[in-house]
Length: 77
Image 1 (cartoon, rainbow, N blue to C red):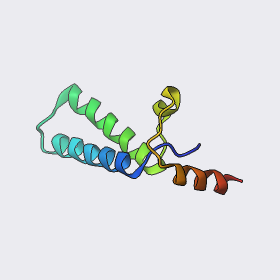
Image 2: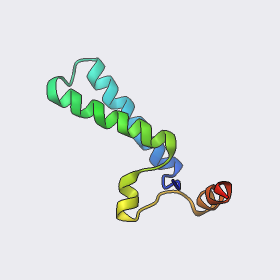
Image 3: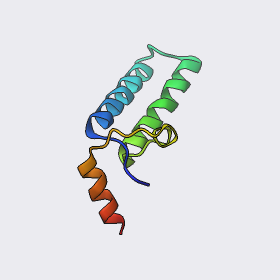
């Protein structure tokens, strides 16, 4: 897996995941919406942790700086 997420993207995803968690834990969002937001939050946390988003691969996107990509590819070899 080649990294395809930059620092800004990861920060935004972590912030959104924390916001979703707060909304769920305080009871602002309940029921099916709480489950949906919870699943999205877990996905955001996971993709941020590994710096890889499968949807970015499908659409050919990357928010990762070129220097970081080159470093990641060198480490693989």
